[in-house]
Structures are given as structure tokens and as C-alpha cells.
Length: 511
Image 1 (spheres, rainbow, N blue to C red):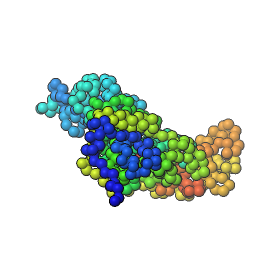
Image 2: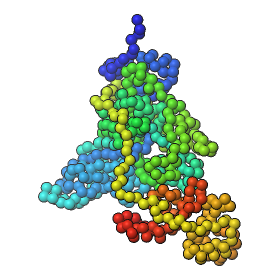
Image 3: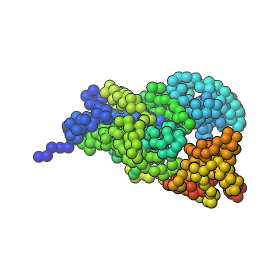
Image 4: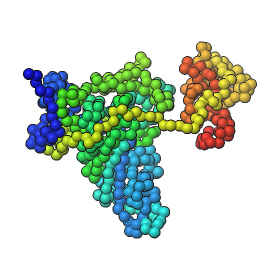
């Protein structure tokens, strides 16, 4: 007679939590146990696998109720430490988003920091205005509040705990400042996020135990999965969670505001989710290891929705500190904290073992076939090819300054691309460069040209080119093909002409 397969219920496991006999392991150990005992025996041996992640989760925030002032005010606009919160809910309710920037300190402070300061018990300066009604006559209020003063402060994060993160690198010759951190030029670094084998949704990839109503560890407090997160895309193994918990019960140890230099503010969130080992199948899935987790290395130097995939890589490779990209050894850096992810998983394990945390099955499964769609765009977006000058004169880098000056006069152009012997872009020279060279008695063009040239390609949206012009304080740039051959030129003058013809495009040119 065949041996009966292991099947446990949540009720049985909760009974073991209650009587102290529960066996809990962290997710990074489950792989060893399954490897040693096999999935069936591991399912008998282990009752709960605890996961953990601690990383920047921009799609986070807090619903707050302040109580009524005397005389009452209906909040129309509200600032907490000069960070604006959304008030279009009710008279004294607001939602503070983690990425909202301070109107005073900009990128140095924002919603994530306000949330951390609240949890740390620090006083927060509140300033608000109202439009005045018969029942809410007050129009202004300024006060100081702490977390204790609030009626409710409920964290509700629309998108947390991504199932899988891409790796970000940068092929261009300039530094990029992104939500994936600072990306150095020429593939000089690669940044990644997520806790690898400890990540919650990697241990339950089919959402058998994680769903609406699943009880979780959220920033040191008990919390719940409220539903699937925004951008939930399980078809591409990019599931996300919407989570909620009481901010008043949270710990500043598991919640930190952060600034990504040159990009903005975020909030580091600590999330731990218990996986009840109900059967052999769940035990096997929870045994995932870093070598099993594959993700893609993406080139963030291409600012499009569909960025190029350079290669696939495992978390084992990422954690080694070095990966290869196009034949080059590239150092890797995690945005998430593995130390804190382990701390989250351990803290959840301790609470379960001490009888302070009981498990719950979801009241509804998360979708397994949702697909994340791009934004619908109904208006035409002009591209570089719609605006660029196609007949462009170039000059060889071996030319003299006198030859360059003559070409500038003949073409009436203030920017001349400089090319190599095989026709590839090597630099750019301007009328100003020529004037300065004459004054300083330079002779060779290679001495004075700008070698690090900001460029564009045919299919690049014009809006991105405008950003480049403004950011780098330039008025023209070459358009090149995939072989770095000059095929056109785009200038602020040509953009201005287009804007004049198409008034519906409200570009803010400061060139």
C-alpha cells in the first residue's frame, strides 16, 4: 500500500504555533533541507518557511486622519515638513506618498523621510489651507503633530515586493541617475534589487499561499496583503503585492527614508511573509536558491519603454560581485539589503515560534494571468527623424582649424561633426571652439574638438532630446546610426520651428 502524501492545514500549523511545537525555517535554509531530505520528507519536517525582503519600494504611502480642528477646516492643501500630501478624500483625511518631494529641500527630503520620522516619534510640522464652507469655515492652520496625535495612520502600499527585478546598467558615455541608483558610463557598474532566495513571491510563485488576506510582517508590525499590486504581471514573473498595516505599530528599524541621488526620494520597506508548508509541492517551490533565480540585464542608456536586454543572469552570479557584459567584467551592487532581509525573516520566525504570529490562508487567490499594459497614447509624439537636418557637412579629425572655420562659414552652421578616417563620429567642433582656438593659436582640430559627444538616434522621441539639450546646456547634437555614422543634426532652432507650427506641443524650451 502506497504511503499517504503529506497534507497539512493552516489550522494544524496554527495549533502547533499555539502549543510551541511548530518547526519554522528561513527561506535561505529550505533549499538545503529539501536537498538533504527530499521534498516529501521536508514537507513533514517543516511547518513554515519565513521569507524577507528590505529594499526601496517607491509605491508606498500612508493614509492619515488628523481629527477636526476648532473651528473646523476642510483640508484643501496640506504639507507635512513641507512635503505635500493628497487631500482629495475627506475633510481631515490625507494620503502621504513616499516619493513626494519637499518643496523646500527638494531631493534631500520627501514623503519617505516624513513616514520614517513619524514612526521614530519625531514632531512633524503641519501646514494646511482650506477654501472655507459653512460647516468648515477655517481657511488656514499650522500645528505640530506626532504619530501619537493622529487618530489613524494606516500604511497602504500600492506596489511592493516585486517577484523579480531586472538588473540595470548603462552603455552610454555619461552617468545616469535612476530609480535603480547611479549608473556609471560604459558598463562600469550594474545595480540590482530584491532579496534572492529570501524574496516572498519567489517562494510562492503561483500564489498558492500568498493572496488577499494573507497575514504578513510589515515594517515590524503585523499587516495583510490587500490584493495584487499595481503593475502585477505574473505572466512575465513580475508579480507584485498591495499591502497594508498600522503605522503606529511599526519600527524605524524596518522602515527607512532614502534619496537616490539625482532621481528622487523613496522608502525602504521591510516585508516578511510566512509560507505554510502544506504539502510536498509547496515545500519544493520554497526550496528555490539563488542559482535558480534568473533575471535580465537591461541597458538603461536607452530611454524607452522597451529597453535592450543584454543578457540573462542568476542571483548567484549577481551576489558574487561581478558579472560579464559584452566581454567586460562589470561590478554588481545590490540596492536591497541582504542583511536586513535576513533580519526580517528571522524576526518573523521568532514571532511565530513564540506564539505571537499566526498564519492565515488567502480569502482570494491573486491573478496568475494579468498582463501589465503600456500607457495608451492618443496623440502623435514627434521623433528625431521628424525634425533633424539630413544634409550635414562633416570634417575629418585630421583637418586644420582653418579648414573647419571655412566650412562653418560656407554652411552657416555653428556645429560641425568631426569624423574618423572610417566615417565614424569622433567629436564635434563649434564656432566658439574655432574662435577660442584662434585666440590661443591652436592648429589641429583634434586639440579643440569635444570628444564626448551627446547624440541622438532616428527613433528617439523629441522630448528626450530636449531634455538632453537643456540638461547639458547645448543647442545642437548629431544624429547617428548604430555604427556611429552621422546621418543628421538636430538643433534647438529646428525644434523651435516645430513648436511654432504645432502649438499643441507645449515644450518648455530653455535652450
